[in-house]
Length: 187
Image (tube, rainbow, N blue to C red; front, side, top):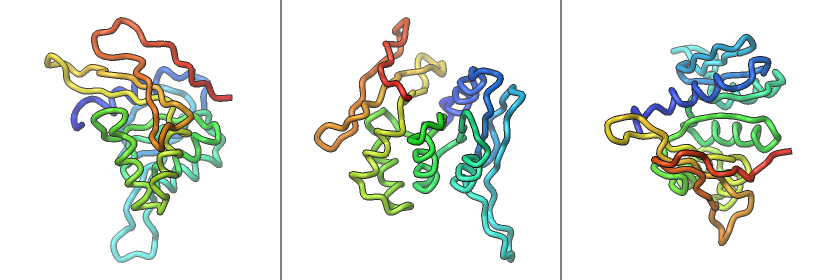
């Protein structure tokens, strides 16, 4: 969904991370502003015209960030399968991360991410779903309700898939007072 406040929410969540955390932010273009003393920003850029200098992509930034010993990886928006694969690999190796992507519901997020992983990174659809289930802890949906931007839902992703599908448990929906208990814990 466009213009719903995904980047604004991502910025707010990232600004809630403890001040001593080493954060590496990877964006295309830079839009997230963090009031932290220990933030490194890597920005994607296209290859210069008529140059042998290669482009610097979001996935390049994630791989470079891993060498910087980050406590958190913040990716502005995942638009390609290569970017998703690099971020999900980092998250599966216990590097917490936050990112945005476009999807109407939690279940609907799996298919476009799987298609991107298949098309851009040649990851089989079944494996792409498994990667999603292992890497993504929570999905937060933001959108418009009663003329205001709001959090419309929060879903927890189960580690184990059922019948080849990623399983979600809704933790919050618009109008509720509190978030349900999150059971997924990383070591």
